[in-house]
Length: 140
Image (cartoon, rainbow, N blue to C red; front, top):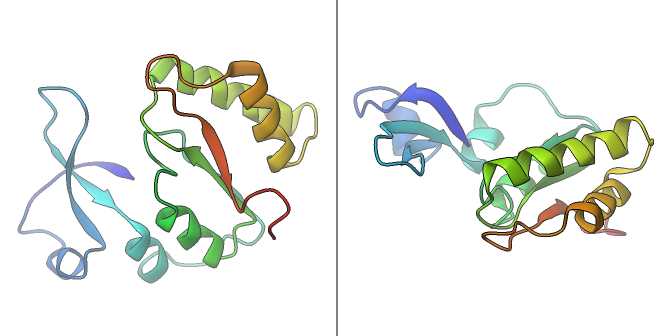
C-alpha cells in the first residue's frame, strides 16, 4: 500500500531493515519514490485489531498476492477485498462504488457483494483484472 510520504532512505531505518516499509513508484513518469507498507508492517506495527472489519483496498494488485490480505485477516478482519492485477482508475472507482452499494444499500455479505459487482461491472477492460475476496467463498 502506498503512503503519500516521499521516500527518504534515512527515515524509518528499522522498518526498512525489517522490510516493513520500502520505496515504490506510482505508474506515471514524474512519480517520486514513495514509502510503501506491506504485510510485515500490518502484522508488526499496526496497533489494535480489525475485528470483523471488511478491508477494501481499491488499488492495483492489492490481491495479486494474498500476503497483504492475509495479514489483515490474521489481525481479525472478516474479509479482504482487492484487485488481482492492474486496474484502470475509472473502472476501479465504478466497481468499488458498486461493491459498496451492494454491501450498504442492498445489505449483501462481502462475498455476495463481490460476486454481484463482478457480474455487473465485469473485469477491467484494459488489464482484464477483477475484484476478488479473501477468504474465498465458504472458507471462513
